[in-house]
Length: 123
Image (cartoon, rainbow, N blue to C red):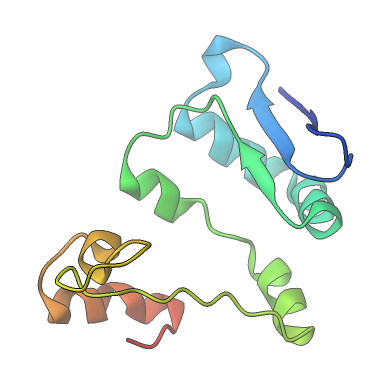
């Protein structure tokens, strides 16, 4: 069971999702929720543009990689021409944002190339 709602004065963002009870904070509980309620997740994502998951025990990078947007949602964004672009700098170049080394958790370009392949991202 989860609790959800809108924070802030505009009543649209951020739309938050949080566990109702302590026992539901685990990664497995969140994945079960995604599997059991895909229409609910899709409709809130399309209506609000983003979902803020707070209070869940997501502590490892693999937890975040597993929380993928369902393909039908990605396809709807692609059909509308929506794309997510993230410009990554090299660690040796000062500037805002994360470096590609931090993002891909490696200093080897070959490893970064392999990790980005499933996302069809260019490097």
